[in-house]
Length: 109
Image 1 (cartoon, rainbow, N blue to C red):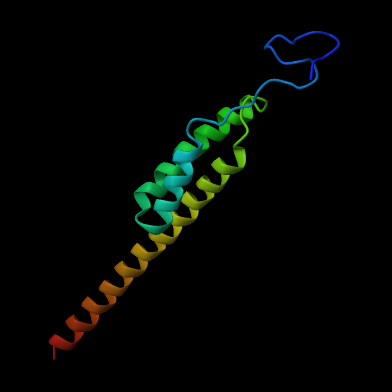
Image 2: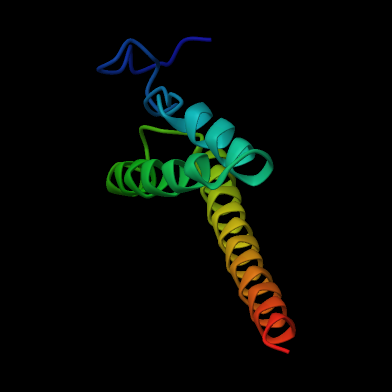
């Protein structure tokens, strides 16, 4: 379909806008977010940091990228995975402190 006004500055007919592309780190953020949720919180932290940077780039130029929701999903998975893993570490520390306290109080008799 051709435009009656000729081609636009990027070769498309006027009225269609620029071609949007996927942000190059979008898939990485999602994969790291999933791995951070399932495997270890190091990936979650990476997804959180890279996702923040990628979202800032997407928000700075919203017409250039089309995968903001993918980046947001990976970032949120990274945040949730990091917080859940951190809560697990805190609970394990509390558990071991209680066990050591109980064993120390029983051995003093």
